[in-house]
Image (cartoon, rainbow, N blue to C red):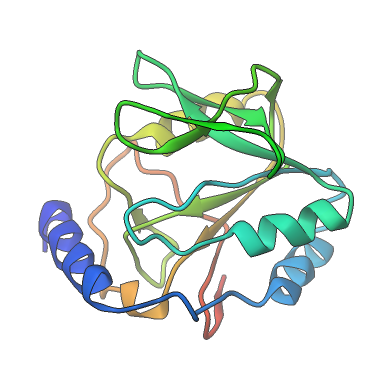
Length: 181
């Protein structure tokens, strides 16, 4: 299947399924950080959009453990960066309808929680097709070491995600059922 077909199929399923009660086990993510010896305290999260898995509870738990929370902000040149954010801070809506932090305090996350539409057992992901995460990952991997954790519902798993040289693999994918590594 082509990525466009996968996107269409998963979006259709995700719209039909009420996923409000499905959550990720925070302890599984902490276990990953411990096993990978991640000592940094900057988490790159995301604000859920279009029925994505809601990671706000996870971000709140990280905040309670004294982590600094950041969210992505899209720039005009199809690039994005992560900026400091607190649940008390206002959000603005970008041209895609996605809430973003209003902060201008740029941070480079130690761990990035990545939203996705579909994934496979080889840690490949399908996003919305803009390449924002892939470009960001390529850009900051030259600056620092970080961990990529995809967050998804288990029904978003597909047999195979077609990839190209610009697609960045994730380090882990965490669903409500399991951890793929």
